[in-house]
Length: 241
Length: 241
Image (cartoon, rainbow over all chains, first blue to last red; front, side, top):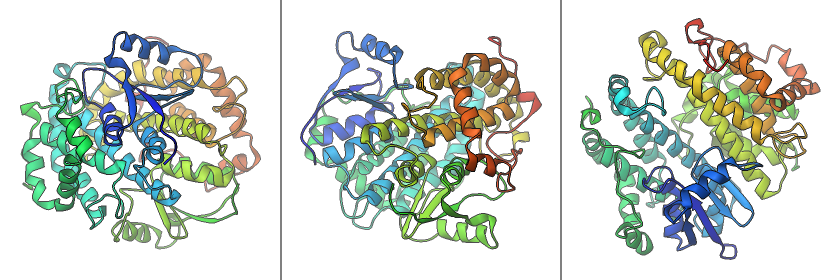
């Protein structure tokens, strides 16, 4: 673990969204960080940074640490991991952590597209028939495929990676929280098939700093502006359930 | 650059797809590699590996190097980069390379979803109305946003990253090739606005090992089974063109 640093997280202030995966890592490690866009003038600061010169991010979330600004959840976590003690420094294990995190990224994108299958720029109300079709397919095929995969490759010791807690565990916790919120019927139906994931989830929820965060006002509630949304018409019952 | 190694790439044998981004890096570096699934019994070997125990990949492409098996294009390139001399070893620059590559990943996923907006498991023919809507939005908003972003952050020296050739340049070459194939109308209309990207594209195409690869039988043609597909009904004319 390198010397303690101070971090600035930039993300939309009213949703958990993709930023939450970074927040969980910062909170779990007790890092010194500012959630910039939740402070006065923060959204304007975030927008200005995205429009500035140089190798700026494509979109939030992004992290600033001294002169370095980096974006994409998996990239941020890959960079923060060794600094926060949230991944072993061994390069092969770091590559496996990043690999798992990128499968989380893929799952999150597919969850987003259950309510926005046509375009992010349109309202959900303007793509409801397509969303229903996509959600049916997601619940029937993709949700069990992703959760089944994470369950299968999780270690027997109660960690995603071998025998040590990592940022991947935090992200899997968030995935389960999000899926329970957005697709309660299918998620609950699958839970008997994912004992290792539930063990990871419950262990993470009890980590002291994370438990304190989850019960604080810093933890935003899920809502229908984020990635994981609860639309009853999309909470499809799977045929396998 | 570390000692030369021998690599095995596992990817579907009849498409460029996501595997092509890894192939380009291996070919450009003159690496010693085997495209396993294109050899006898290779697909069966790939499938068996995905079903084996341990931290196996979620899906192809994946790379094997001695005992290490890692998946996801951006992760593979992040790992290969220093070994193939395709990214500086400086950690901040590597994070910026990975960040750009992850935006390529996002673009590629959105291109895929123009022909599969409802489900990968369904045929294109079973989601044509949704595909048309998604393609219209992609061409109108997302294609110019992504290309405009890459153009804006590219260095003035003709490289994606500062003043050195990297795996990101290879991926941007492939993105332009793919978009020209799948969305020729919009891509050609945008090209006057992306001189830096065209400079990167043309420079990459002329690198001796890459030029040799592109004119060899190892370079598969684009087709309607891959990520970039040419469906005339999806080659929408943008209003901005």
